[in-house]
Length: 367
Image 1 (tube, helix red, strand yellow):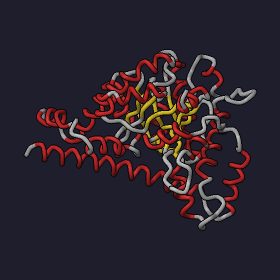
Image 2: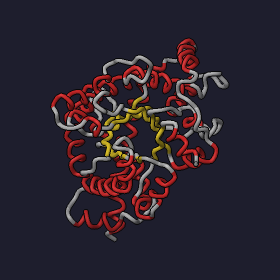
Image 3: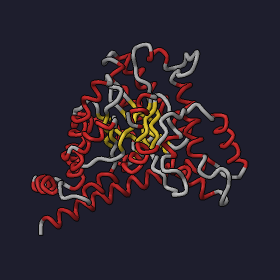
Image 4: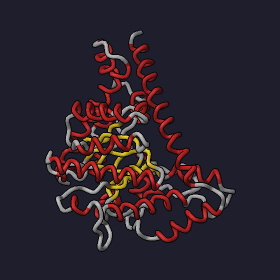
């Protein structure tokens, strides 16, 4: 048994933070699933790279352009084709897990991060267009995104809440899921167990920003990303009754077979070469969680990672490290606020870059 499957035995699903048509058609995605991967995530940056690095999209680009589609529509059609195909490949995982795993995520346009109604409309359209039960619609956990999450979940749509950096934002995302699922249950639309969600809590970007604010060789360098995530996990345990004697707001839903909204550790590729390359996988291993990893991190983890770690270990140390950071004059709240703004802007830039890439490809294909 490899480390990916050992992690699954310990309650953590490993998802691949990568997708491409070549990966789907060559059988590479199936090979990852055979290794133990139980999900896939995507975003405009991933699609940008996939389209740039391959000519496998050229025929579809010609076809959709000939039909008169603009670049935004062409991208969506390419993405829908890939997401639908990946979802079909992962469907046996989804069925075997009784809907609790085997998902593929696709993002609403990053330009809608501050548009609640626009996010709802696009998410509904993507959900209906892809028409696969194991798709998750990615919605940013911005102040305008949170109400959209509640509405979408209340309609039975699987949601991957992305760009979560702070405990407050994570809490808002979890409460939106619980509220939306309660509405879904009260309306009698269907079985609550069919609705799934993850809360994507970003890790390495926190360390990058905190490290830049601390003096060289400071003892807290490389510590706060995991500490922040561990505190989010404690909040998860509280909100979703994952502790002894738990009888909180999720308890009535849990009794109906509803799924918890699992924390998903995102941004877990190690950016600082001085840190172990499996730092954000080993340090965040625990039940009812997901870790979405790039291919290089996946290979490192499967080779020499530690699937036996537990998220509930060292939580007092994590709280102390957050306190010490404030004492050192570094505001984690400001850092997470800045990271959210920067994340929204970066996703929007990636989307614009992707559209330019499609335009460039079409121009080359025309000549």
